[in-house]
Amino acid sequence: MTKLWNRDFILLNICVIFASFTNFSLIYLLPVHVLNIGGTNAITGLMTTGMTVTYLITALMTAPLIDRWGRKKMLVLGTVLYALNAAGYVLFADDLTAVTILRILNGVTQGIFFPVPPTVVADVSPKDRMVEAIGYFGIAGALPAVFAPVAGLWIYENTSSGAFFMMTAMSAAVSVIYALLMHENYHPSAVVKESRKVSIHTVLELSVIMPSIAAFLVYAGNSAVNNFALPVGIERNIAGMSLFLSVNNIAMIITRLAAGKLARKVPFPVLAAAGIITLTCGNLLIAFAYDLWLMLIASVLVGVGITLFIQLVQSHVLSSVPDSRRGVAGSTLMLFQNTGNGVGAALFGSTSESIGYMFTYIISAIITLAALPIRMNKVNEVQN
Image 1 (cartoon, rainbow, N blue to C red):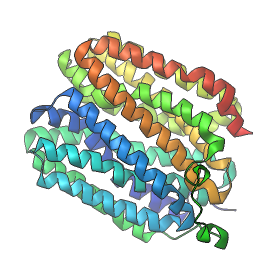
Image 2 (cartoon, rainbow, N blue to C red):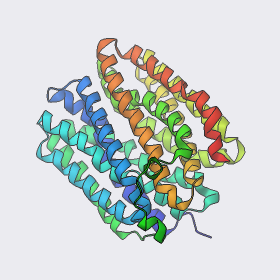
Image 3 (cartoon, helix red, strand yellow):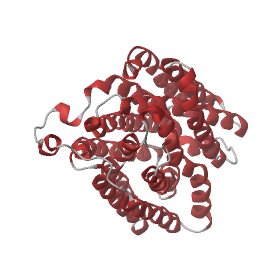
Image 4 (spheres, rainbow, N blue to C red):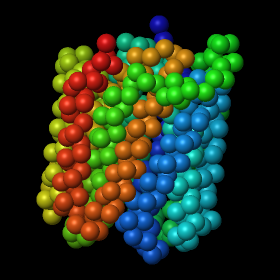
């Protein structure tokens, strides 16, 4: 039987740690940088939307290649392009137009890279420990977010934006090394290799559409936290808001450790519903929080809610399809997640400037809660 902590699982997690450090640094600090070089929240939202559109197009085109070419080839290609994209910020840090273009191009590199690691996790992990494996993999992705905002903000404020972007580029470059060290654990059949027919089934796994729609709504609601947590703290003069991001990600890590054990005792639909409701409460609390302690409580609720929901859905989606469809299935789920984040970013970028942050987070809570009936009726079908 395959061990959970096998060589390739460990190498993949290290690769993801370095790539995620770059990703979280840009997610949390780029909105601040955009404001500092003359941009607005609306521009930040449009940048994220543009990134999502390019991600959508790229992932649709490349998802079948994960199953047709092999996981390692796509992993190496994705990490190399992602590192080159990160290096671009070093050269054009103070040019708002260039930063906008580079952020949109992040969608291309993410569209190639991001769908691959979860597929590899499913390949190298025991099926009876899939929820646990996805949890540890998620910790690898979330761990940098505990210290990336603090370290990134310190470097950004005490040195220069160029030094901050150099740090993110170097971290992305290290992820390439660990991708190269991995084995290829998936060998496509001749039928899969030679398949050239293009159809909706080629680029999307239709059996996971409904849970993917639920994920779209959850990520759309959560995008208010991802994209505007620091700006809302700045507007409300809340000191120490970098702790919000660290506490949020600590809550995510603890939840990922507990989810595997909880999934053995609590029915999947109940746990997923609990995640949605907890995330909704977190967004509502942010709407009315004007001091750090309330913000930190909200950060815990948001971290627990989004993690509990998506870890369960992701593990069941990847385990419910044949090996030759895992790349497409994982990409389908990520397409809807990222589309939700992009749509939410554009929406909340506008609402935050027109009607304020309070109503922005109330709307985000309503959107999140809308996933509940979809999840209850459809997501549990993935389990069976």
